[in-house]
Image 1 (cartoon, rainbow, N blue to C red):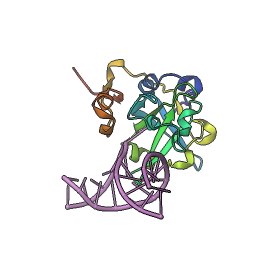
Image 2 (cartoon, rainbow, N blue to C red):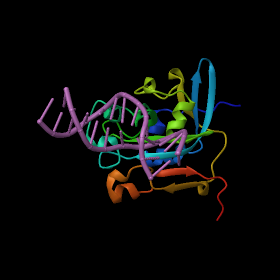
Image 3 (cartoon, helix red, strand yellow):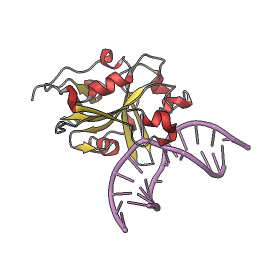
Image 4 (spheres, helix red, strand yellow):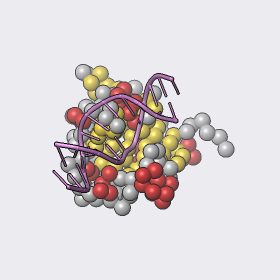
Length: 179
DNA sequence: GCAGTGATCATA
DNA sequence: ATGATCACTGCC
């Protein structure tokens, strides 16, 4: 299978919502022990900045959220519920904390299953998305029909309050949908 | 429906 | 030092 163009900082240095939408259909690529796995991304969520009450950076710059304040195109990986690694990519301008959570790719449905399936842990935290670090994203050969990308509220963010938790910042690839 | 599991952060 | 919280998953 042909390799696509590797997405660089220019792709990620835009608002999280645009990046989250356009990541649908791109290929998440993981290299472990010389074997490369390419998984089409089918579910993402945008965490748009410090004003976003669901975004970890809403609480300010801490040891954990520091990476979101840095340059775009780096991985933000953190542990949730003591056992699940969550994989995000930092977006937007340096100094403005925002990120996109990768919730599903290939056969992996759910953010915790995705990281487990691709052997992603805190070892990838703060590293750039690049071939060199073994975890990157490529443009896909296939194109996604615009009406195949759906939006819903984000999952598991009720703590953010009715306004922010209801915003349609989750993007889903639903190729078989018909209306 | 809810327990597991441990890093993180606010509070002291 | 302590306790609450948590961008989830799997099993009841």
